[in-house]
Image (cartoon, rainbow, N blue to C red; front, side, top):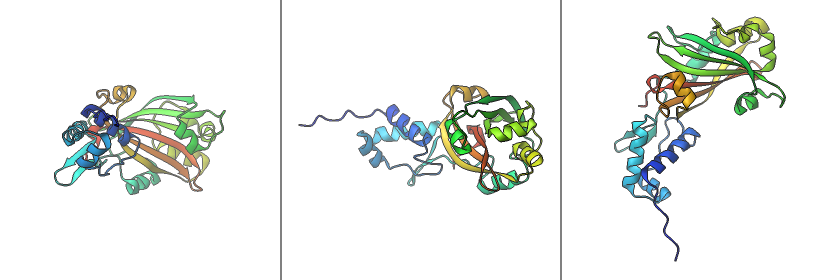
Length: 240
């Protein structure tokens, strides 16, 4: 006789679903499995699955819609959708009116593995990095981000290495110095929970719901010269 599986408690189900959302298995706006499907998958009662979804909803990661199901929170108030993001970057910047950038530090680093892949650098290349905050007109931090820059652009554009805001952004600096057309294109957006570092920078609790956005800055020929990871607090995006 096969032994019975031990049921998953609600916190375990919630944590696993949170991780799956964070990995992008359920993207922004995606419909989660039904209570019956979750109960079967996690070998638990439907009430346990329901409680797990309520935990995720309380953290702002999903929205529970009566008679429709549970949906991963969307970034309705994030900087922009893809079309607006492209338009803003074409004008030389990605920030809204009233927002101000505070550069925390500029440094050389091995960089994020995904950044290295996107930028196509060699194993022994170091990436330039600009770590910064963005504050809105009310002086509330709405973005904690790091831009990883291709070594060639980092060496050629002195402004990228200076710890001060660039009025027309990295895109504008590259255009002016290198004479190369550059456009920022968002490639990924997902709900997640703030790490300790992100929570400190954003002024929120560790584990609070956040939106993580990945944007690539590309030359006209498709070469990626900057890879940016931006984290926004729950107050900057609302699931509908």
